[in-house]
Image (cartoon, rainbow, N blue to C red; front, side, top):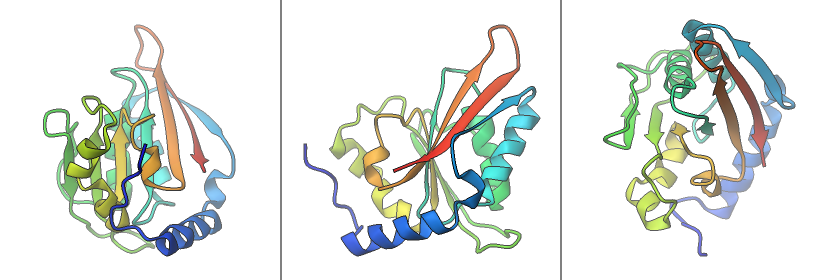
Length: 176
């Protein structure tokens, strides 16, 4: 199956990949954390945001109610983006403007809900995700198996939730 070429050149991909490895000291290997509350899930998002830069792709996976949108709210807060962050279920993608960010350049956030996307390349191209990847941090809920091909490296976060409980578990790692 042909891949989307978008606006990324081979040079841009190699520079991103090398740069990503140099600043991933905070996620050197697979990590796991129990998140007893929604606030803990948002706090993890703020923590992860500290290492994210324009061009990074975050793929969130987990069942309904696992905390994907709560984690995205935390990432947005850590990036300093402006505006309310809610699930983009019906519009599929939302872009949030960059705001002030402690210790790093401001970067916008593109928040995508890929639940209804089939993985068809034309469908993904219509969202212009490949263009946004160069300019924003892109967080994709339900993105596993759908968007990983858009970049050479992405942060994969698997969220799960204990039955009849607010307790969640997050497992995350950078994937080449």
